[in-house]
Image (cartoon, rainbow, N blue to C red; front, side):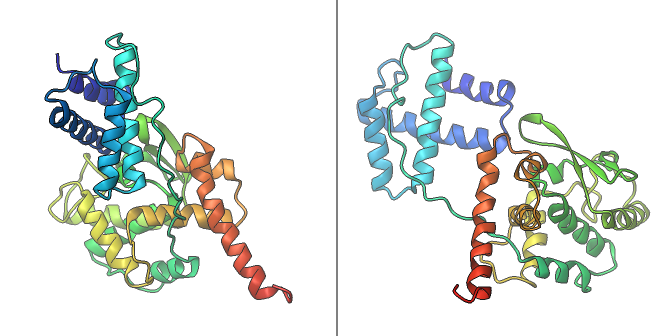
Length: 294
């Protein structure tokens, strides 16, 4: 029996992990299986021990994998053996006591608030189909903090234009309702009118290409990079940077941390707390500039 394949199916259909997570786990597990095979001539799930796992970790570090990557790979092996134990295929998890490399937390990059206002208010977008669609993409990502995958899954019917609410399907198929800025209604109406007139009705997706097909990841990355390039010198200009900007600006304005957690769809508060470091840094910077003894 192929236990690796069973594990991948478990992640897909029972855990309902995202396709990105499943691909990453599969890649890590395949790499571990290959290492074991090269080291001992075969991969036997019952003969893998802590020493073999440690040897793999040392090899990864020697190959200059980052602590974050190594940590994820250890998590993959742990999760695989938890799955095997759950199904009573093995009795022990050889990765249980393997130490995880220390990961230095990177503060999230975000675009300054005045730069976002400048981009959205000062005529950077054309009035044709692509210009209006691109502005809607940027405005939705920044105005709601949704993830890229959530944006790609949006349908026309997901908007409650009277309540200024949007319904999104997040990680593990969890649905959440997010309030959005009132200004989005006018832009949304403008987009729907030009899309339906020039491209035709699309029940498959809200956002489409000029050929009427649903937009895709690379297109969104290109759009975000193109417009952020105009207003910020940040090295990284991705859809997630707009999510970071949304959260940071809310907290800078005094939003409750738990409320921001719910808006972002985080499963635990620690994932949201990373944004408080950014706001504290901003407060410290303001203090140093403004206080006579700063």
